[in-house]
Image (cartoon, rainbow, N blue to C red; front, side, top):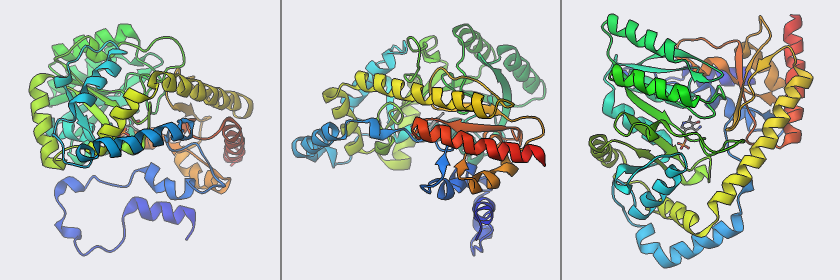
Length: 415
Ligand code: PMP
């Protein structure tokens, strides 16, 4: 089977299935993400993957963490290996408030619900608020994993333009007004204000205030998805949207990028009434988040210098960002891109006439992988863009990957 056939089979789900007619309607929009279909190919060692967003966990002090985990099981094994509470361990929730305070969030441990990664936070929040046909407004482009969740709850995603300063308030206002005039029910705005996945941009402070004011006026809940906020390469973290409005914003946080995704620990900071429903939804989905994972993260936060680790990560990722944008300037000057001030991603606009999706099989043959822009829209836009991630490969591999990509772009441009 060729790479192209494998990708197409995984994406289209054409395998024979005796239960085909029995699936619930909500599953009809579910499909393997373009990223997942790619992984089997992109993970081969000879391929430089600029596709996935895997953190560089080899940057962690694994010996120190290993010893701390060993001690944890010996001293607190009975709690770590037991069921826990639906809301999450109190000692971890306390530490989460300290982490969130770095972005100006003034929260009490009772305001926090621990989740199995922020991905589960997205799922729970969507489950609480979305009926089939409800509208979720999201940036254009938007995080592929959120679009998958929204589809699975049969939401209608309406995209709003962003630019170098993030979501454009005037476009948001116009979209909300139009949707209301059409009688549509807009339930929430889903936004990634910091080091956007995939667009790389950060919402300016001025716009944060404007976006919140618009959403308040239109009675639209703001879901702030912020896994990258502490991974800025310049200056202090931006104030979270939640720091301006505790009642109108649900904040999703994660330890996946600042520590390690393997523990699957994220969190939601939500207004009181929402929080109670979130705990009920957690209990119905998973009874309680993993105690072992929560205590592991708790132990890491209390025994390791996590602030120094975040600083190290920032430096590591900044160097990789520089390698990526430097290589783009050298090898693919006809493309255009933003220079992200943090996070993992560069959003590249291809030279006119090129289509990132149809170019992908050729790129994989040249041993380089990326995610085509279409993955990040609910409506088929984005073919002229690709997302390149700089978090996992070393700077040398990044430069080699972009060099390979340039041969693909040049070959396609000649067709
Ligand atoms: N939101 C965004 C914007 C992300 O990029 C990711 C990870 N790729 C997530 C949520 C989910 O992260 P996790 O479940 O590991 O916390």
